[in-house]
Length: 392
Image 1 (tube, rainbow, N blue to C red):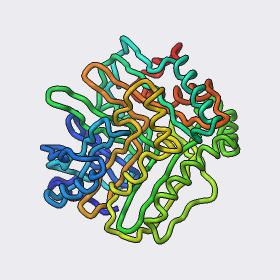
Image 2: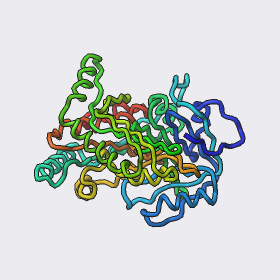
Image 3: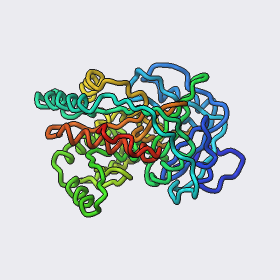
């Protein structure tokens, strides 16, 4: 991966960069490198969603440096992409031992709000299954949001997420508007698109099950996931969509015949790493990522039918959740992760998100349990593990 320009001071390791983070800055950390952006930002000018990649490339051509930020799930929320004044970069993975002493992730929550409620989520899954039975949909992803009234220590939370997510994509993107502080922070296991020269990689995930404490039962669950016809079908829908989008852009495309297991702190996932060689090396990582977005892993299939269904029944605005977050340099190289296992954090509250793919054979109760397992990624890092007790 070509590195964007660095600031004059020397940085030894990704851990050094993560320790330098403070609210108001932005971070994107991957298994390859960590970027810390600070200083004045030049934001991408407003415009039509169809020209987003072109406007990003034009801003980089004019300003140089690196384009960073996040793009929402749909066009109802504006993208937050910018060229920062300063970017520091450290090569290599960002995992490793946690610091000896870290501040508590969040104050004790004084209130919770779920959208939808557990009963509402089960009902939405039932409606989705009825539409699938009528063949209006093959798959749809239905999500939940959990708002916690608590003060969150962003720097400590970022450290914990990075330490627990060494093989994934950890990020904190400043969303502040005027005097309103807001940060998108998370630890995504899913790579939408990485590009270096003429090489591209996408690693879609679909098909999941939560971990359990008993190692024997946990291993059994992982093995069953690899054999589950329902989960393998859900996964194949996503892989086919990604491969179909990349194939016309690539002179060579390698798609493994079967998925592999991907482990995160709270979940087992099915994942397939797709690699390609571009016909046109000048194609930008953001343009290709936007062509893939949204994949059936976060929306469904057919895409527009699934998107309309989500707007009809989900009951809340996803915002940047299930969008894409990352960076791109002036050569078009970059990394874009799917914005999942994340929260939007304000001064006195945090809103967390999680979703599950619904296909024929899905069980409303099991899908609810899956979303709870995914919510626990952020809750555990915030040291609010028990916040879902009694809420499902």
